[in-house]
Image (cartoon, rainbow over all chains, first blue to last red; front, side, top):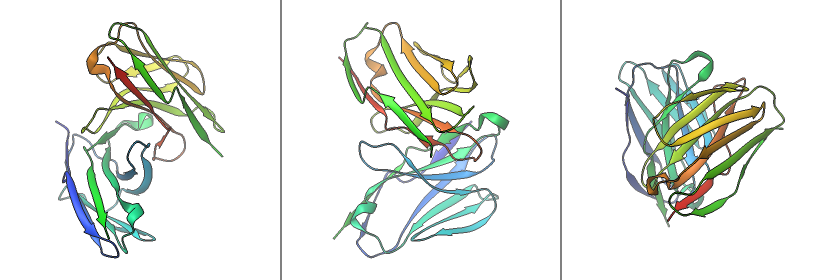
Length: 112
Length: 111
C-alpha cells in the first residue's frame, strides 16, 4: 500500500528553527517533494529530493534517506509568514504520468 | 511564463445538481494535467490525470469525470453531486520538470 506520515501540527517561535518529518512506505519511489500551503490557497513547490542527502535553498532545507524511507524539511529563522501547512509528497513510478502521493500535511504555527 | 487558471473560485451547489469546473494553462504546450481534491483535514487526493488531448486516467471510482478537449484545457464534471463531493479542487500541470504547479483552486460546497 501507499502510506505517508507527517505530524499533524507543530508550533514554533519566530526566529527559531523547526524540523518537519515525513516517513513513507510506497510501492515505488522516484523522488520526494515538499510543498507549502497557506490557508485557503493552493500548494506551492518548495523542494525536490531524489538522492540521499541535504538540499539547501535559502532558509529552507530538505533531507532524504531512501533506505529509511524518511525525509525532513528544515526551516530556519522562522518568520510569521511561515505559518502554513507543509505537505510531503512521493513521486510514484509512473514514467510520463508523474503521479504524486501526498501526506495529510503538517500545520505549522509560528508564534511571536 | 506559465500560468494556470481555474474557475469558478467558489461554488455552492445543491445535492443532485451537475458540476463543471474548468482549468486552463497558458505559456506551455502538451503539459501533463491533474485534478486533485482536498477534503477538510485531509491530504490531496489525485482524481484524474491526463498526458494528452482526450487521454484521461482515473485514480479513484466516483461520480466525477474529466475531459481534455484541448491541449491546455482540463474539465472536471459531475452529472449529480453528492454531499461527499464537497472540497477544495485543485488543478495542476507539469511539463519538463518533476514538480507540479497548482492552480488557485475551486472551493465547492454541496448543500
